[in-house]
Amino acid sequence: MAASVCRVGSSVGRALAKTRSPILLSLRRGQASVSYAQSLVGAPETQLTALDNGFRVASEDTGHATCTVGVWISAGSRYESEKNNGAGFFLEHMAFKGTKKHPQTALEQQVESMGAHLSAYTSREHTAYYMKTLSKDLPKAVELLSDVVQNCSLNEADIEQQRNVVVRELEEVEGNLQEVCLDLLHATAYQGTPLGQSVLGPSSTARNLTRQDLVDYINSHYKAPRMVLAAAGGVNHEELVGLAKSHFGGVSFEYEGDAVPVLSPCRFTGSEIRMRDDGLPLAHIAIAVEGAGVSSPDVVPLMVANAIIGSYDLTYGGGKVGNCSYVAL
Image 1 (cartoon, rainbow, N blue to C red):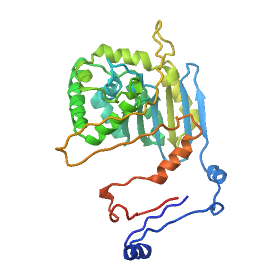
Image 2: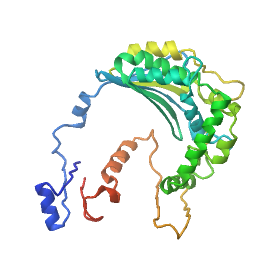
Image 3: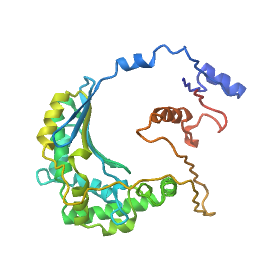
Image 4: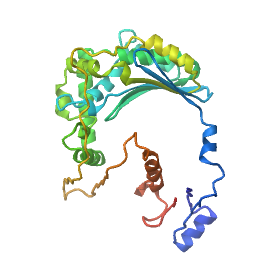
């Protein structure tokens, strides 16, 4: 497969501009200079270790002077109910309000003194807290991440402050018709199942979530077998495992009573939903088809096909729609 971008400044681009006919570029079998197997030779080995409590550690050592390290948790909107939909997203906002050991100002100063970047995100199926930092600061980065994940300060005053922030963010998203369209697409494709819920949840839930709701969410989902400490860059795996034992070895793997969360099966439902407003100047349209799951052997070919199709919007330039700026096969 090959792709080429044709710009008017190049000889090929000038020829295209004159002829206004698309150029087709192809790469036939046998033309590749490097085989798939050869391309993997230079890739760093992924090392994986599981602690006694089920907590997993994964790393790839590239030998660089920097690294990215984070904690990935199997908890997202798919694990929520109608009552607490948006709890994971709310917790993400609370994550950087500080802990008992590192109040917000101290936490921010620690990250800044390392020249690091601390961030988090929530999706339908997982939550992540991660840092980009110098490799020599890996121990401090893991310590801070451990404190943020396990000892988040759920102060009532901070919760009320973040409640206002979350509600404003929800209002902004509701005004972004592209985001609304994609959420509706997911909601109708997986209607009647938790996978149809949005990551942010409805504004009504954000206004009513209590501190106890957040505590219950953590107690239900932040368990060792559902957590992974992953790092890539200048990372020594044995060092990372040692840090994981020190900071995450005590994370519980047990549930109280019958509180083990069981994922409801999700099904794809072919259907259609429309929200029509003739007063709007643009239409937002999204079409989805049932695809391969993350564990399917077809997921990689599907991702390659997605990359081949690419994306385009009017801000890209390169001529009118229909006069292709690149073709990849």
